[in-house]
Length: 326
Image (cartoon, rainbow, N blue to C red; front, side, top):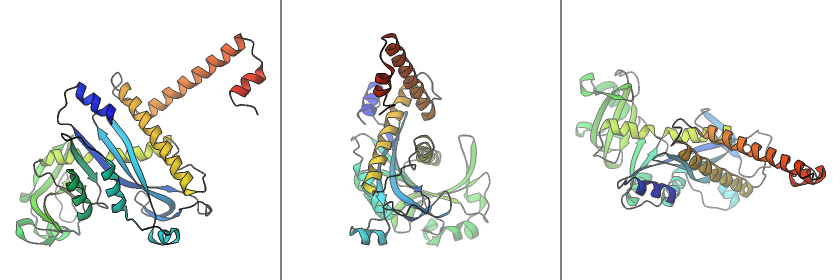
C-alpha cells in the first residue's frame, strides 16, 4: 500500500479510486483425503454444486496499475465449528472482517465490489461505517420499490416494465438496455438500482440486477466499475493454474493457512513486478512475469555452474551447494 501511495503522490493524484473486491473460492480435493483438517462439502459457483474442498473468503485490491490479492479468511460450516469449539462465522461475517482490515487514506474513494451472495444490509452497513461505497449484484427475488410500490424484482421486470421505460447504454462496445431508479431495496433505505439486459429488453428473461450506494454515479460509470470485479476471478485462475494454490498436501489446517499466506505474498510480489514491467510493456501478464523470473533463475544457475567449473570446484561440492545431493 505504501508503494501505491508513493506512486499516486508522484503523479499528483489527490482523489484516487480503489476497488476492494470480496468473494470466495474453493480448493477442491479428492474424496479420499479425509485426514486433511477442515475439509467439507462447500458450494462451488464454477461447478454449480457442492464439492469436497476447503473454502475461503478472500479480498482483492485493484488500484491504478496494481491488481493485488489482499487477505483471506477460512470458512467452516456450523457443524465443523461445533466440533472445533469455535464460534461460527458466515461468509458475510468473514467478508466484513476483511474489509475492516483495509485502511484507507482520508481522500481515497473505496468501492467495495461484491456479487449477489454478499449483498446484505449487514455488509453494506459495515461499508458505510468505513466510508466505503458498495456496487453489488443482487438476486431478482429481492423486493424493490419503483414508483413507490413494493414488488419483487422479477415480477416488476416481467409484468410492469415496458421497453419505453429503459434507456440504451453502451459500455466498452457492448450495448445494454437499462432501467434505473433511486430508492428502497428490500431493507435498505436508499440506493441506486439498475436492471439491465444485453442488446435488447426481454420480459421473459431475468435482468442482471445491480445496486450502488453512491447515488452520484451515472449508469455507465457503475457498470464500468462493477466490471473490475472480474479481477478477483482472474486472480483465482492465476492462483490455481500458475501458483498451485490448491495443490498442497498438508494435513493440519494451520499448515494449509501458512501455505496460502505464502501464496498471497508471492502473488503480491508478482503483481508489483508486473506493475513495474507495464511501464515498458503494457500487455505484460502475471504469467509473463513468472516466465521471466524462471529464465533469470535458470541463467543464474548456469552462471554459477560455469564459475564453479572454471574454479575447478569438485562436483560433489557443487551438487551439495545446489542441494542436489545428500
